[in-house]
Image 1 (cartoon, rainbow, N blue to C red):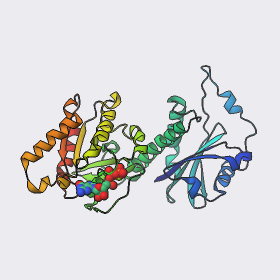
Image 2: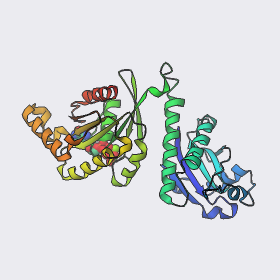
Image 3: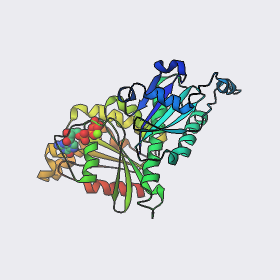
Image 4: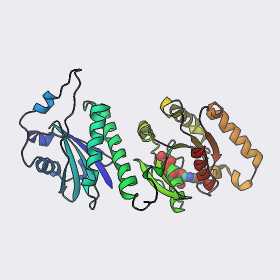
Length: 340
Ligand SMILES: Nc1nc2c(ncn2[C@@H]2O[C@H](COP(=O)(O)OP(=O)(O)OP(=O)(O)O)[C@@H](O)[C@H]2O)c(=O)[nH]1
Ligand SMILES: [Mg+2]
């Protein structure tokens, strides 16, 4: 499984002490031994550092934009890290780090093709802007990881199925609403109220339910991660938005984040399930007070302007990850919405 992606800028021997290092999700600056990158670069080139950047100059094409030349990826095992690196224009390096027993060559084609596609066709990155670089790395990471998870690792176990039968459910919402708790509860049956660990990267959980294979993409909800939702949401079969209904102070924020996605024309047809979670905290599911439940639902509809959701299949329901209230129904709703 792919564990980390990184990019090194200024791939020149004389610059080895002044490399710009970007990585996701781990910060390799902190994690790797001091001379790790030096050894990586020397090993990659077998000690032969290009003397000039002919490829770079040659690659200016008529419209003035650059075409990036990507070398064949090279595998190396350094300091216990299983790496696979591609040089770009003899200047920069994109690297993948896999788990120790992975075979990097399984990823050769996808690594080359995706890098080429993103850099030369979609032109997603100029390497001048840090945010561009981070987004490029994140996109590449997600796609390669998904390929590994869904095709290389899972396919043999479910070989009777087509690889594309993994249903992608994109689970998002502001922080602390209960997304990770939800996925864990469905996967393992466990719930821990004292567990408090904000998600910091894309957490993809594979869950088999009723003979369907789900990839639940559990997004980090803290503000700084929300802009990355746009990348994870691509190719989703369904989007699941979670609200903490007991925390009215954050309703306005939750509403704005929901509508940012709903108003994006790119995702206008993806079915939507909205979960009003933590219903136990307003003690409705225990008292079975249908009137009050309906009143609360009406208030949520009004506040979040849910009646304005049109042109897509969608549904709202209350849940409690803590008491298990409606969790099976929520999964059933995911099935139904996808099949509609
Ligand atoms: N009472 C109650 N607490 C819940 C429920 N679901 C989750 N929690 C608690 O809410 C807190 C936050 O849950 P998480 O699952 O980490 O929330 P998250 O949405 O994944 O948060 P981020 O990863 O930061 O986006 C934890 O302390 C959970 O135990 C629920 O249905 N009822
Ligand atoms: Mg989480």
